[in-house]
Image 1 (cartoon, helix red, strand yellow):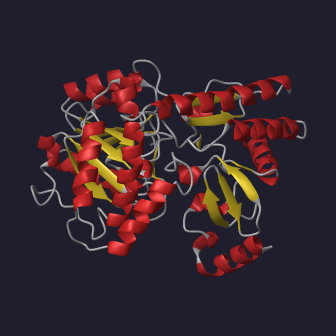
Image 2: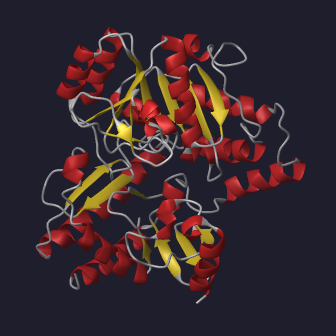
Length: 425
């Protein structure tokens, strides 16, 4: 099998045989399929096996694979040049499109990934406030920069510990980890450090411990607390931006953060990120201000062409989001019915076209409740669905997605396969 052959070769030349850990399928104990092509809602691996894809490159392909208008825009720009390291009109068009769509963004800086966006937003928050402490939430992932690869400390209100080799204790000491959806804990942290916190960074809808929506009033209280303490509120909308609604999670929940990070969809499938916010904050970024951040390929014309075309399609067709909601609801309610009939306890969380099926009978509202899931059962479910041609995230604690390209037939086939699979688990 070609995927197996490629993986054997990859293991010799790349750590774990992959360029991002989740692709290794280690939690599932499988050889990862090597993907050759994608079209609409389907992908094909190097062995010719076809799958209905609910990973969608981890979220950015809201229009499905190889959307003709996006492909055309990339081809057109590639013929003009792939990269200049200089200013282009596309950067301006993209910045204007983002500012028009996202309520909190007045000025925006393009970067090359979600990690770079959050890393830069943290540096900006510290530079703007003159403070050092950052508060993040357990289970929320904001990329692999040192300040954010931090796990909770030994006490509820203490600084964190490195969550990765290579992250120093000195770096970790400036980050406090709170519980997601626990506003009382945040109040306690502010009571202990009332004038020391530069920023609170949060996924307004968590997507990296599985899909976990905010409790009612959590984001509103977070906004109120940060504002009253002169602390910046950073919304990490790398996943939720243009995914849960055209104006992102902040539009959905009517919250105005100080800084927003974006990624995924604004690249139309190509690598990209962005951070933006109030003008007085963003003017602290070089060359306007003292907070340095640069990138040779930032605003790359290929990514700008793909992203601008994607956002233009979304802006002209707002009904897309109600259609995505209907598809996602059909998939989730169908899976819940199947599991209930088989007496398999599950909780399914969904916000818009983001969703996760947790194998637990508990409500999932934070990292600890997500961790009650039966990961062995999820792994079995995942393997058998994959074998039957349904491509889901290989980890229980990831989000899956639908696109405009998914059809009713896709969803019905998925549910029929799921019904057969649960009989075996």
